[in-house]
Image (cartoon, protein in one colour):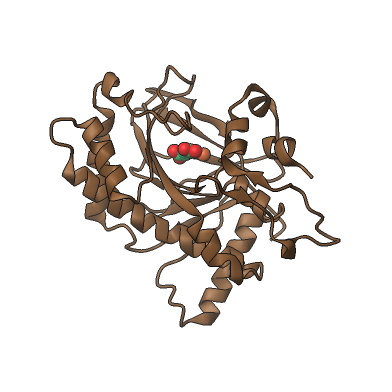
Length: 318
Ligand SMILES: O=C(O)CCC(=O)C(=O)O
Ligand SMILES: [Fe+2]
């Protein structure tokens, strides 16, 4: 797969029984190639998210964004400032986003709902978002398992999965009400490990930059079942540069508001990211020294980190 097409690879992950080893293996090859060459792909997974659940989560997220600004501003993470509420005053793009840091934990989700809906929480929202994030996390685990297997690193799978947790971020892109393309979210790379993105309505806008930096590839889902998977910078580091962490942005136009939900795989507190020795050899010299995940994340929010075209290399390049 040497030529970059103007479409993201589309890979079907439904009904991937581990008993059908030839299908599992061919999917593994497709995923590895997609993540090397594009840094992402569109996954179809029929019925991963039942229609009712998608609708109900969509309603809950609309209600969330309709809350008063003062309430949304309570969504603050003092340790990791960008795991907090962002609105249009913080950036000159159209995005507004709210974060649940620990989206697979019923306690975290209830605490969040009680903060946003102080009268009696929002049991429907809590139940739905937990289930939704749990379903999306299945996809992350399949993809990471396949990546590690394709690299011959099966022995690290459990450690890899156990050293991470999930952050959910929901996004609203206000309709620009103009036919002209308007920036919804600035071009950036995700600094975490893996990102799973689901567009909640039919308003497209995500674009992924080709590896050669020349083409913005639209990541328009071919169906509402489709989910976009992207490599984060920390996975590039761990794989010694084998996987590509793509720049991406959101561009919107027209009269409809766009809603998305992202599940971000993040390292647990105190986790040191260290490239396995199996991935370092004469052809692949060590690119990044071991680093503390949160110290790196903090660096990316400093002036030096923000100004750097490649904060990972700047921070821990070997
Ligand atoms: O909403 C989208 O389509 C993209 C969101 C994104 O890139 C992010 O939250 O990091
Ligand atoms: Fe992103």
